[in-house]
Length: 233
Image (cartoon, rainbow, N blue to C red):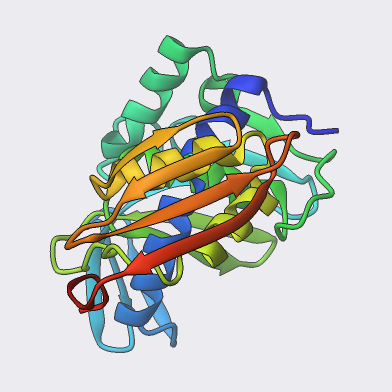
């Protein structure tokens, strides 16, 4: 049973496929080689590429906790790398998401498919901010999570072929409601759709249609797309 709040689970489900696709796009753009970061200057450099970043928070492996950047005494809400992320806390206050407003989040209960619960907090936070994705920067004892907010980093593009894989992976991490995950992904890419309890029909950009089927428990079953040459191109 998840220890996350229902509000966090629902938000995560709505954003998960969008975030996973953007992470793949960021991985193609940003080399994961020897890296350096200057959080005061809000820069992260790897493989000769430098991008603008902000600090989401950090995950402590031994304590199994997530600490928000604004709650970290080394930084605080006024730090240049933290200020751009404060909208996450504001959203948490408005929607009643305790994971976004609690300074240090206990994730010792998490035993899911992600490496640790902090990864899911970073996913949801990065999804709220949009941008180009997030980076897990490892250090002795844990990982700092940086949000990439840089126009040179490309946004993910609509791709109906990879959608089933993205949806399945997203649902494994945030299984709250796969129909919501698909709706969030289609809405993000401005793809028109209509939904029932067991079927989502989408009108694909450039022509063509697709149908996603769900079983009686709301689980994703299949995705069938009729693609035109324009859609594939």
